[in-house]
Image (cartoon, rainbow, N blue to C red; front, side, top):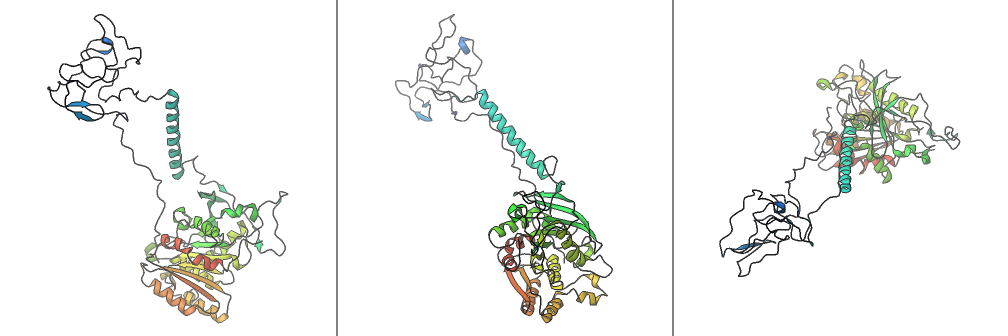
Amino acid sequence: MSYEPDGQDQPPYRPEGQQPHSGRQQGRQQGPPQYAPQGGRPQQPYGRPPQGAGPYGGPPQGRPQPPRPAQGQDQYRPGGFDEPTQAQPRYEQPDYDRPRPGQAYQPRHDQPPYEQPQYGYAEPPYGEEPPRRSKAKRWIVTGVAVLALGGIAAGAMAYFEIPPFTDKGKDVSFGQPAGDKNGGAAKPAPNSKMSMPTGPKTDFKNTSTLSDGTQIGVATVTGKKSGFTGKVWVWAPKEYNDPQFAKSGFPVMIALPGGAGYPNNYWMGTDLGLQTSISKWYHEGKGKPFILAMPVLNPGPDDKGVYWDGSDIPGQPKMGTWLTEDVPDLMRENFRTVKSRDGWAFMGSSTGGFAGLKAVLKHPDKFKAVIASGPDIVPDSSLWKGYDKEKAENNPELLAKQLIDKKGPDVYLAFQVGDNESNKKTLPDVQKFVQTYTKGPIHTSLRVIPGGQHNAKTYVPNMGMGPMEFISKVMEGPVE
């Protein structure tokens, strides 16, 4: 039951470097030099000294002068139009008075002082000043650019978890009793459906902070009943810390991954959007505001096809007890939860779907519902070899038959399977299970995902299109 999730975290988008500017100012015209007809005075742009003279009447600057066009040849006019030569030349009086011999250049009284042109650029049209930036404006532009670059750098450093731009590793105060108006711990009513955190408090550390301010925390836990030590990631919706729900217990969903599910549970990553989807579905009226518990599924890597089926296989770590006893105990110790099984459910894909399905059918007194996406239906770990009796006790088909024979309690099994699963037996096997065991206390729904593949990116969006509503209608929370 090997499974690799699709769609892991990607580094933040970085725009490619912009091409450097050519150096030309915007709004300047390009074009050949301007000439008057033969024998006429040359047409000069604004502020340029006469041909043959340097600035302010000084010597020539050595700029080569192109030859004059032959008589009768088309002349160039500013604005981009060519006209044939006329009897009277088309030019305007230059913006200077030609100095007499020995007299320094004097600008005209109605024109601004002459400025040395920057050769290599076309000059602005007559009567227009090239744009100039004040020092204040330049400082503002520079400041904005620095702030923008600083913001980009801070975002990148936060993404790559470089202090102090990240809160990863800081304590997360999950499950702290909400204070009442007098500053004391909120106490439930004697007949309350909710359970206050029992303690001891677990030291959760932040791994991610979502856009709504909620956090995903992680702790390494040693199960008191299984003896197994592993990581558990937890997340609570924003409503959990809302004063409106200070005395409310919240439903818990234990989310299991596919594949090995070790050393990480991929639901703890934000790229698959499970946490934001839980909040979205709640506000749309499609789901409950579940607290998520995301434990490791197996005690080691999925090496050479060896996995543990989320079960207590003789001689192996007790992963069944870990998932159905130790993880729920951890949540009760740290969170306000629902006392009854009406606030407890599983969710999983592939191997995790099998483990969640089997847990609900084996412990219907503790869990009421499951969303199983692309699950296996029967245990198939090679570690079951020689333990046929124990293997049968963890077979969902046999467990379903026993529950029907006992006539309860009622459980709600929501399946979703893609019609393009990598294992072509997955959909037929689930369909057969639904047809065979949907009776008495077993209630089922099946969503076939058109074009759906065997990956988490297929399953998460489709959970809100039926499976989440199916189980939420029969579950409770928040409750007082």
